[in-house]
Length: 504
Image 1: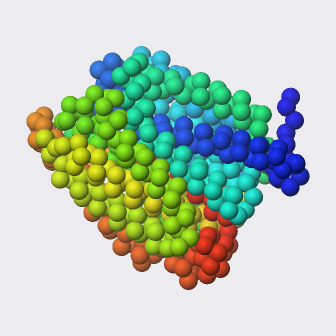
Image 2: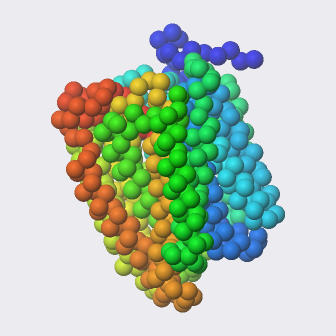
Image 3: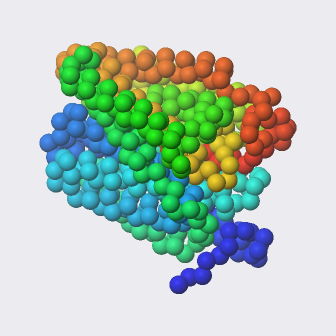
């Protein structure tokens, strides 16, 4: 067996320490890239999946939502498990589940098999994603090196979500839709081997502190609520088929809150939300995710269904937006040292809103430059700039034992917002289309979805101005809101942002 190496760089020769540290960073970033990639990589393959497996329109939407809801619902449990059972153990468990589910999805012969595999991928991602961040922050010493490592992790996650369209287009056009899932298998196997060799295990806590009931309630609540929203497209808002799951989902989420308030070791300690930076940044991340998650979905179907692009052409068309979100995520830490986290977050959200407003002018005969490229650049530049400061603010007050939990909470807020936002925006678009199959009506529905997203983002920016802590605010742990942290040009406590974001 390969001997484990201690995480502290001061107890190893410098060269070996640097090699091991960046191997750990590479493993963590690759794991995050995979889980974020699979939020969006299926988008361009959806028409092929529908033809091959005979999926209905709502079923097609659930190819996306089955993953994102399982991802969001179990991420809090995954974050807590990394704190309790050890980050290496949970990393290997998560990547193993994700790889096996990808294999099952690639060989699915029925629609329900594909949906079950996508939910399995989401569960694996929920275990894997929080562990990637705790592994990275444990391996890299506090200071500029950790800031650079987190920036790299952030950018890789952003690139994973943004590159999904291109990678999915290449695989669907050259091989088949099945390879958007099967490609994860060899990559996952390599990551498992590398993680087994290079990762050091963190200390495990009390293994009895697992809130399975809370995880089941929050996941069931999110899934049921999303199903109710999807039902409005066919049944309307007042039908029993809509109201029963909507009210049932909200009741399950309310029960989750009650359970967490009474549990001895809750999955989501409500005290964490009592910290202003944590609660404000998570609500902001939820709103950002709800608007931007659907961008890749609607842009992909617009490019293929209206402009007549092939899957590969659609992926290439969105490549500039992919580059923009990657570059903005890499630049955000440097800009944040000058502007402060709050100012950059608000600016990024407003830039994103401007891009969504521009995209809402799309037409049937839109040109690539003004209907796809430039609005996409604006939307994703803003999203990349906003995500890093929001994640940093959210995690600035985390105690060491809660690092995985808070990282999971940020991911949960973003992914939950994305899943519910896609359901709402799809309903908005369908209501505008009113059942018509004409290109003009379909395009008008997509445009209304983008216009709605722009309004949500503007409202979010106003909320952030009023609620997010600023430079002079005092936050726990000397976080981004403290004077000391801002004098140093970075949070007083090393940030532990959690991203994927599909949008950034």
